[in-house]
Image (cartoon, rainbow, N blue to C red):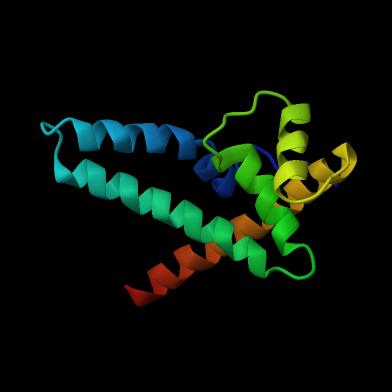
Length: 127
């Protein structure tokens, strides 16, 4: 299976998640910043969480896909290597072999890209 490239919108969204959580904390702590920036930040964080939670509904591997994406991109602990990620997943959900992790992560990112594309298309239709 081909690896998801850097043109994946869901991957870009997921990679910005931790940075956005830090930015949100700064925006809430410093009253000089405008509410518009905080609103935009919250909106993007909410979209990311909503998309990832939709993975759980995917049959038959939804929970596994969710835990792979959550652990890799969203958890408060920024795990620096694959062994740490796999250990975290095994503690929270179940043991996942290394090769399965890469295959399922690719599937999850494709599903997220499709969901994101559907959301964008629906928003364009509503306008």
